[in-house]
Image (cartoon, rainbow, N blue to C red; front, side, top):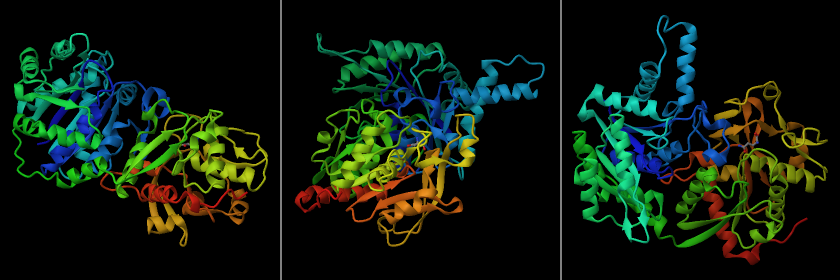
Length: 542
Ligand code: GLN
């Protein structure tokens, strides 16, 4: 029978519940158990695709084209497996389904209520994951978003409570992740907020079995005893989760505290093997790099690093592949000092994005990389801007643009496909998820992928306009990857430049620490080479 572990959060948000859930999943997997993670988001949006990254951080795209919470990215990276649409449940989806069924007449005669109708639908979705997965899973870890005490998350917590009642003590476990703030004046870590938060959980009928305490300093055994007493958990079940130098070390830190043993004991689950050796070696590699690559990341959400979570991690993985630390310089594309902030970097990356703020600055960044032969990697919008920049400054098509930013441009080098023009709604209507890309032999892309057919994930509406393709190619911007069924340009690269590659898809979503994405690995390699011999770089070409 599949067992469930519910992970809730207390006191404040941003405690790293997602990393905790992913780390625990990693530990369970290392014990030979089959495990997956599920994220519940209490907002009414059907998915985060329509939300501003400032509110939500990155939108993570799964292989099957779902726009999901960024925690699914952590699950994929820690577990090294693909998540799917079913791994993210939002209140919006749950209500949408229940209301649709009500209109259909499924509940004729009944008053449709949060309990049981909404909670039943949530529980149905808890089950959909193990059923959908090949074979039977040993453990499903369900992370409930938000903080205990929020109104929105109540139906999810209630469903979690009911699951405990239905399956019994040995099959359901509750882990509460909480914050112990340090008060400087009294030089103490405080447990009161945790006590209150556990009190709130108990009010709704959940007694946590394990408390994971986020602290920025060691937790004494007296404090553990106090939390144990006041929150009614065994002392060994009070686990400390200190800040880690790299998120990939968290599974090891939690394992050192015996979290895996505690969980297995509470669930009466036997699991003899443990294999964390290769993960340990990987963490050592991250912590002790031989060299450093400095990469400029030129996006508009520089104040909110979560907006580029997967790009950040994929760059770190590229570093792992090269035995290097990657130091990311977030550059402000709206600053007049833009070019100055690019000085001395080994490589430049322009990530995806929407809306016209910062576009002209990003075009300057592309121009800088192209003319000074700095390794350049463009992702999605970054690829579209590489095309616009080339059209304007090399082909001299003055005013060339994407119709996203200038619908009346004379040179719409990036444009909507006819089928996108017909789209009215905004939710889940982009080109989403994995598509095949045929890679042209003899190109940089082919050398890196070592394959003529790859699959990469997408999230965009606009495409390179094939009307301009011949012109671009003749002048040196080569289309090295296409989605053949529709003849869509997927990869472009610049002939004669040491490393200039831009992709219409988002390779960052498929990169894993144990399996760095080849494009990111090669980009970091190129950045290291460029930094090692700056004098060898050809100078401005045009
Ligand atoms: N805004 C562009 C489009 O919709 C790029 C999207 C992206 O970078 N994810 O095509």
